[in-house]
Length: 355
Picture 1 (cartoon, rainbow, N blue to C red):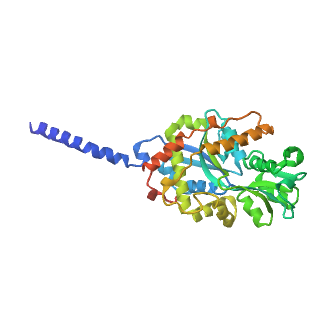
Picture 2: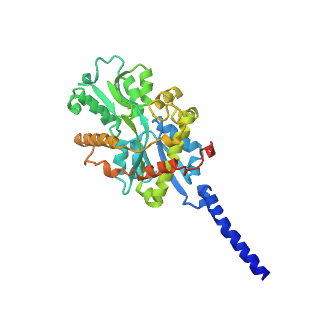
Picture 3: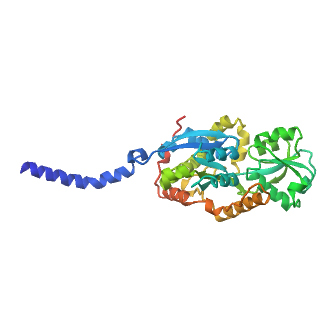
């Protein structure tokens, strides 16, 4: 009888402790909860500042690990090659401006655009002695990477300035951003369509800005492959995007450290990177509250991207017309942001530099 009473007392004690054990398990790290570990091959660009700093934060801190993600990083010069790597299955994400992300996503079964990433500047930059404005590019040579968003957005402004058929009225050359400085220096071209930090480097070297983008006019998008979404689902996508938001917040509050990291990767002077960061709504100054950060692609951005894709199709730079809306799925970033708003994320105080 004594043994039976002791067993009953033990059972009552376990039942009373069960709520405490459950509450404690909620506060455990993701790994302790037994969530599916995520393995990712992550691609980013060595010549695209601001977004590059956030990727460096993911690379050098434990933010991904805190969210249960083990990652390998691959670096590309710009969005075109990164998109091709995603199509080939070499990376799980697509990081570029809207046009190259959309073009890659449309070629990958099940892939989706899942968020925006950062704000950027872009410009049409001409020789120092260039006379006039955009309309005076008629008969001149212009270069730009055709697979980017910067190129068609700049062409839109050139058309608006009065050059109605730029592909007939100008000589237009498809050229990688890494080649632009040398091309201008040798006077092989009269002007280029470019973005930071190359843009700021050219400005400081004395080249003339014919058009500079307005705040919010340009920015980066993030896509995820169909293979990744099929394997890890909504939870995996939301965890990656939660890590992105945490990294953007940490970068905002430790911007000089992130500049140091990206300067080593890109071999770009930190002074240029500081100027680039001023174009981003969150990196131009410290963000105290992570809950204020929003990476959802809104209706206005979607319409602007549709104009770009329609332009590329009209100019026969895109074989078939691409509808933007079906390529987007904002459920994942919405869930990530809701989790952060509710405090369902690793402690920000647990973020540390690990490499």
